[in-house]
Length: 101
Image 1 (cartoon, rainbow, N blue to C red):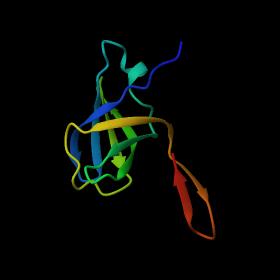
Image 2 (cartoon, one colour; image 1 turned 90 degrees about the vertical axis):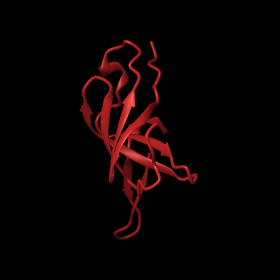
Image 3 (cartoon, one colour; image 1 turned 135 degrees about the vertical axis):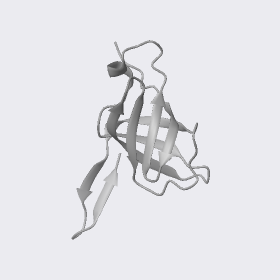
Image 4 (cartoon, helix red, strand yellow; image 1 turned 45 degrees about the vertical axis):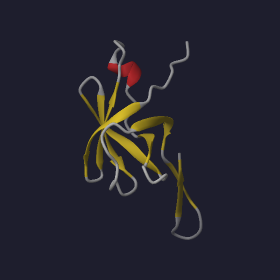
């Protein structure tokens, strides 16, 4: 049986730290919450996509993430999309890294 990745909503923002709440719909948190280091994406009101990475599970329905970009302008209630994989980086030329999800 395939598990559908449920999207969440921003519940709190403190600098680069973004807490995201998921509706568990009565299911166990282990089935609904994204894994540690999983990449999530939020659409900034100005149109940019900001990648955030799960760092900690907080209770039954919330994860704490760290943003990979400036969080100014984000607000509670914005939808957060699960990407289903961690952020991956590969070394490009010399010391530059190229990261993707």
